[in-house]
Length: 197
Image (cartoon, rainbow, N blue to C red; front, side, top):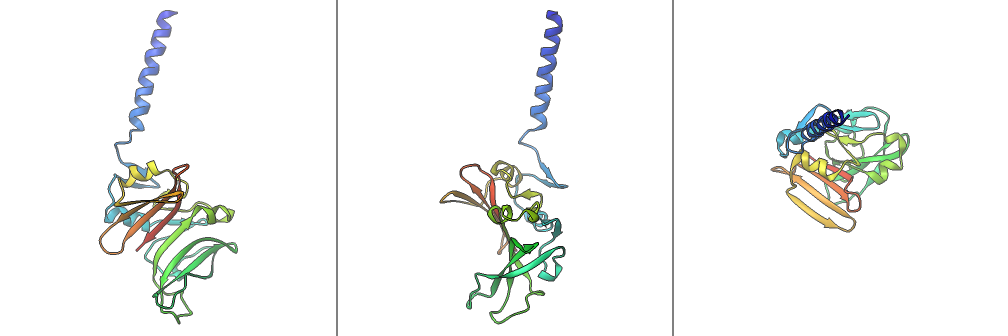
């Protein structure tokens, strides 16, 4: 009986050692067929912008509003500004807000369907208020994912800000390309994801 217990204990140690090495934080992370290796590069940014999922549909940036297919509606503008050459358009799913995109636009431009999208943004407050929004993710990173997962994928951010009840991580490339993740201080979960092309 003692011998059987010893064998079982040794087997448990071997199994636990295998589990910890399998879940090691040092290797690449695979999400939805994309591999991330603690670096924010052009390839990383392409993987994020190449697979935006919302409301059961997916699209890739850069694109136009016309290119976004599925059960989306364009629910009007927010942050419209005469001096700014962009307009933010709310994306709705089944008549409720789900996310937003910013398009290049002159102030008097009324048909935005063929204008280039320069930014995508989704936040958990809007998404959770619309059950039809479904999974919202960029490159496999979802609203609600942990700060630890984002760090395992992209490493430390270029900039970190402490703002009220949130921590904002910004990853940047040359030019205007950047990805921003806002995490709740209380739970370290992604509350908002923004991609700027």
